[in-house]
Length: 396
Image (cartoon, rainbow, N blue to C red):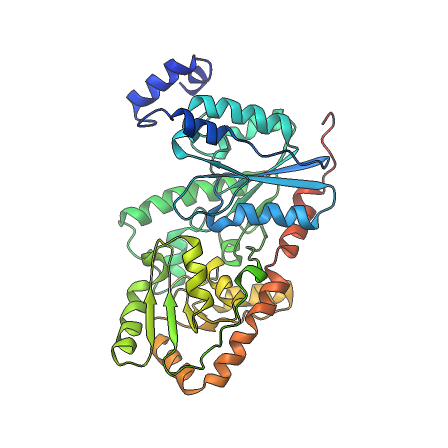
């Protein structure tokens, strides 16, 4: 059916897609035009295409890191349009991503313009043209002589069943939960792809090496300058604590909220709790906070924690010794995040209030850690060493 779909006239495909529920409607002329607005090609002989997830703006960040730090390689990124407003070189409305006209044009553009691809989160580069995952596109990319790498962001690869065995407070303890079941199915497929893929594979956080032992850690990237703040830390009588999860159930918000709400009710702290807000609002809140509580159940740290560190705030989260050890072994740097669990959160916060000098010292180490490990230089070295260091594809 997909092979037939690729060769039918556009109006016929759109009618069939609507009847099959592939897409609820065809894109408007304006939506399709926005989706077809491709970026200016890099001038370098090797060209890296990063697509299509851009979770937390990381596809864009990795592309810019390669641009800045890898001579002879130019990178561009694509993302499906979302509500949080992360930047990308090509932003495609979801309805266009599912449309046959966009898919055909995007395939021609990528195959005819780039030498390397970094495929994010196992998602397809060309919408539903070949299938629901990038695995269905790999033969097409190979025939076009593109060198492909796979990169995982988090829940796209992290096995809930393994996480539940590792951590007592894992949000995945109930395998019958619809979200957990869906994540398990998708992650199992991604783990199989990573295990059998013959090209380079990468993960954005060190905990994911449990799920893809053959991958390399390509650190998430945060711009230290964009998050820098000169607001004082823990000098006011009532510290301002923020918790802004991307998805509350996966961050342990059910454990975090009661503790912080109780402290706020006592007048000890001011508690700011937000979710699903634009990234610009997140930056505003984090840069003026005293303490950022990232998460309490996952055994990792990600972009949100790094943004707090870059702003020089005290960041608290459940990182775990395994991840701390991997970061230290790879970079020589300790992760300056205060360790918490659901059981210890209240005690840790009370210690912060009792010994503000120690907390301020830990917070002050955050910006340097981000500059040394997560400003894009290490990520660019990893991608260059395993992906883009391969010479220019013949004939391009």
